[in-house]
Image (cartoon, rainbow, N blue to C red):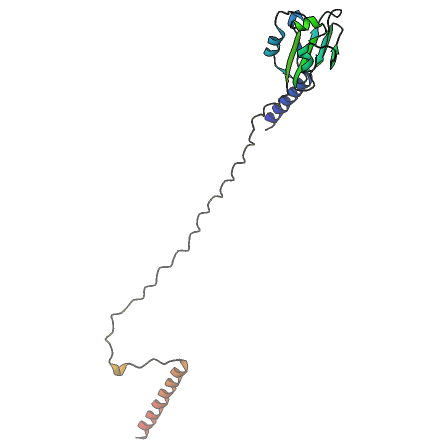
Length: 207
């Protein structure tokens, strides 16, 4: 997890360093800022890519030439009298502080009319491409609790077999006594039976 984050941070710092320093472009190459360079200024500007914080390096004859940063109208008319910024001294550096078009002409009007002028289109600094998102390692799902084997149910006791006797012959209606409805009636019935037996015994004895 730490390694992808560290690489991302280093990449961002490197990008910021490059963006802050920019690139240095030598206008006109080995010919410098002069009339009829080895490569035309328009072609040179088209094949290069300029961004904010990049710089242009101009080298020229300080006694006979200069570099003037002008607006579009003065660029078209080769008018050096309304400079936005003027560079002199034989060696000059101009840094792009914004995106958009920049127009440069020479202080020598005749040379400007013959093509010693430059248009540079500056692009905004592009943010670094997003680094691929690193998914944090997913926490493995907790293992399912081991299934507890179902407790062995107590052994069912074998059903008690009640021996059944052969069906008794159905008694006649006179032998069937209705069962007592409750305990009290059963006790009373028993008491009556005892009393009847006692009376019967007394009768037998007296006879």
